[in-house]
Image (tube, rainbow, N blue to C red; front, side, top):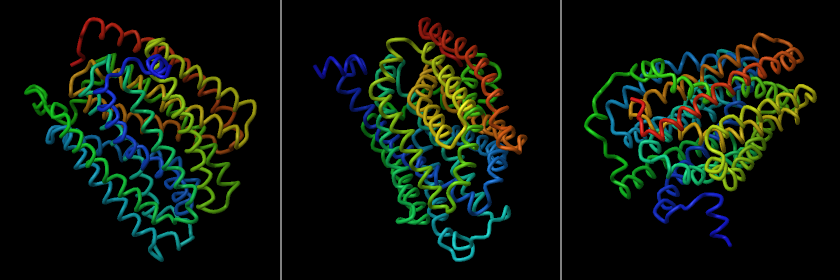
Length: 432
């Protein structure tokens, strides 16, 4: 009975595939777990150190910060083998968050200083550090997976990766709900240690599967840091992936700011806000975990990528309409749980499968521009909308209208890129 249910949900995963995807899932658990511990810390600390009114500007600042970062990342792709990128990048972020933990405990630089000021550098470093980690390391992980997996295996195994990751994404926010008892500096230190686990697990993975670090001679050729950008603008298929990967971020940023603004008005300490956002993280990732276990692989295999890519924007349209007619903290909470939960469990796996019929430069460099620069651009656009409507009531009305317009464009792009992927897979064509 169980084997029939397992085959229906995840397909005929072999023992070797379970072992391989299980190891990747465990690695992603630490990436997503530490990131989701960071997320409530990021907003709670920034609002109490710098001030909540500067959140839209912080998101826009991350857009400009990410350009030199992605150029540097593209250069690292030329200099290092793909698995060694984890050692370099995760080592840097681990050191960063251990340093942040030290300064958070400082009597004048850290949280003991309760005066909010836009000039307090620590708040901006925390915000930009966490934002860039979430984009860069997650993009690097999926690039690594796509470069070591074929399409048929991915449709069976990506759900397992997502399911394991959601365990970490529940554990991270759960720690955040105990912020009052553990302390913000200690939580930042936990983030640093958790990040250090990622390169260790990648090292174990490549020792188990040596072919994961093998690269063809043509793939080792240095093509320069802007090659990914050139590929992105020269291939309509990649521009389509850009739309699928980023348009929801504009809508999510609008709703997310509304939720956090109302939450900060409701709760009056950094710890209380962190606990609320931790509960939000638990709820979002519980939904993702359930869907990853019983829905991700099943929907992709049964209905196909195109159906799944279109279903997500239709769902987003539904929750935006709901918030428009029933604006409140918990309505916003429910809308964000639905958007984020299905984004992680359905849209993201579909998006990552799109990269399989592509070259290494597309997987690492073009994907870096799409996920990191594209994601920041979308969030900056959403933040610009938030900053334009200074009254929250106006933002709730006009933000919803703008969001529904974006959904219409998004559906057309999803149809195009889904059908293009089916053609590439059938013909065995690779996007170079």
